Length: 232
Image (cartoon, rainbow, N blue to C red; front, side):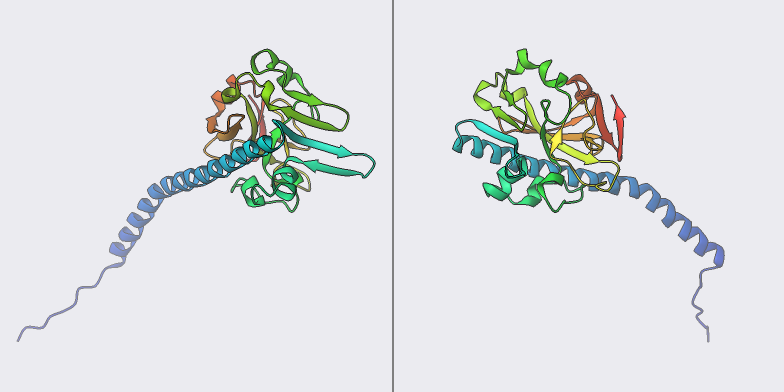
């Protein structure tokens, strides 16, 4: 009578199997990481699209005027773009004002969708260099910044809002409500958060995810990449 013996793996065979699994996992991880980055990039674009649409609704309600920043020195009260669209106008929920790769701040100061700064928060050289092309749509005084949307010459080419990221200090990891392509404001800059692409919202309501080369061509000199601000 023949006896059947169950064949067992040797130690060497087990080590070979483990090594193969490790190699396959190493090959798959970059692909999974890229897929995850693409997914968050798509969600970010979706959020920004809702923000851009909310801006369209707001300026439709307020005679083509967008309130970007307002400070009342008497009441010592600020009104930021997030307050306009979320807290006051109720056009969108606060989560939409934030990129999924950025910590959601408790207040509108630290939501990552930053409105284009035309000199209120930092320098105005970027805006002034484009007045002839984009139009003189920005109005500023000592306490406020407004966009007069009907003065924009090429809304489809004029980005007015984009991702931001604070790279250091007590607010590190949050966004900031102002975005200046050439000036670091409160340790923040426009941010390329998705495979080195930055999400921008345009005055006509459309949204684009643009790479560093495009940003450089558009005049960006300061960009946050991998939690660091770099020069373009």
